[in-house]
Structure formats: structure tokens, C-alpha cells
Length: 299
Image 1 (spheres, rainbow, N blue to C red):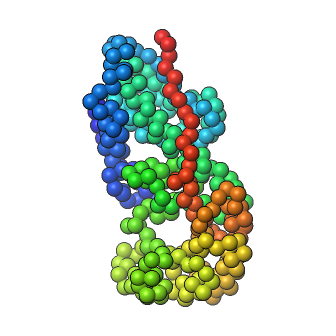
Image 2: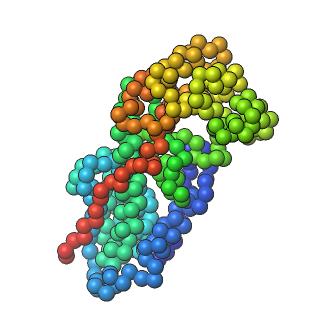
Image 3: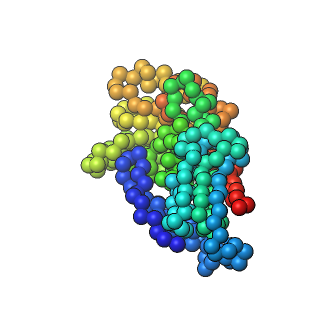
């Protein structure tokens, strides 16, 4: 198994984040987890010199994502494999559509099969789920964004999958934006105190967002002049009142984000309140795995 030395994956902030930035290392660890000290089934059933062609096909309606790590898997197993991306990330696929095609040593194809499919299934599932949520708010002006509720080690790829599905990324991590939440507010002694402490130290000029749970806290956040306000767990009626208050505000208008248990059945009503962003943790933490399979030729 060889290491893929491809460049780092970058988030929306333009910075790299964590070990996943090295796709080659992520692929190496993923293969090692599956391969251990050998793929004995393949080694004991498939001739060493047998060459075959294979395709990875969609088995359901899905949005493609994950071709980059999937290709990296096969090339890490065997640099001599020919791997062709037949459908680009972000493309809609129908049952039977070929997403990747391969040719080369049959052993190599079979050894990389499951790890490549795991990447494709997980990431295409996120892209497919995101596409459904994004379509549900079409025409409202609201954008669907993700959260930090991602699989450890896979965040950059999962956020990329959200973009493939038509969504927008929130902050990449704790490092590229300030989000003052309820526990920060409690620890600092209040919204104003928390914001003032951030401003006293924010030499990086990071964007500042404050989470509020009611209209009183909304007023406090507006008085602080923050760039974004997160309206947490407000029903559509409360969201409409919040949007109206901000619309009448004499100062710079902050971006309004709605958050909290948003589902496909509720997101349209949330979007129609006039908020700018709707964060949906389910894009990444609850997306079902998309169904794809590898089919190898019989010769």
C-alpha cells in the first residue's frame, strides 16, 4: 500500500484543519483499519495475475460525493490501477448510473472496494440529504448551512459533501469564527460581558455570532452590534417577531441564523419567516448512507 501525497483539503476559511487535511494519511489509516495484516479472502481466492474491469454504480437516487477519497483509496492500494470518475461530485445519480470505473489487477480492486464504498456512501448520503433540505427552501432566500456535528476525522470531507448537495458551510471549527453560546454567556456573566471580552482579545478580527433563546436576549445582542445572531429553538412565530425587530433596528443589520431541531417537514416554515440561514445538524449527524455497489467483470 502506498501513500497518496495529494495536497491538503481546505475549508471555507481557506485554512487547513486537523489530520484530515492530509487525505493521504486519512486513506492510509482507513485502509489499515480494514486490511490489517492482509486481505486473506482475496489473496486465497484470486489469482495474482488476474486483471479485471469493474464499475461502482448507484443503487438508488443520490447526489454523488466522495469521488476524491474513493479514487485515493484505489491508488493507495495499487498505483497502477486505472480509475476514471464517470460522474462528478454534486451530480445527481439514478439507479444503475456508473459513478467510477476501474481496470487493473482484480486483487487490488477487491481490496480497496469496501473502504472506497464507505467514503462514497457516507459522503453521498450527506450530499443527498443536503440537496433535499436545500430544495425545501428554494425561493425563500434562506440558505441551509451545516454544523460541527460531524464524524471525528471526517469533518472537511463531510463539509465538502454539504457543498456538493447545495448547502453552505458554517464555521469549520473553533478556530475560524467566534460563536458565543449559552454556556459561554453563563460563564462570562452575560451577553454584553462575553462580547466585550471577545472584542478585547479579537486581534484576528474573527466574525462574532451570539446565540439567543428569546427576544430579550436578542435585544442585548443587537445592542452589542455583533455580526450574526443565532436564534435558538424559536418557533416560526418567535422567528417572525425576531426578524421584524431586527428589520426595525437602526444599527447595522446582523445576519440571522435559525437553529434547533429543524427537519424536512419544518424547514420551509422556518425559511418563510425571513431568516438568512438555517443550520441543520441532521445534514451530517443523521444522513443515511447512500447505496452504491462495486461490480467486477466476469472476464
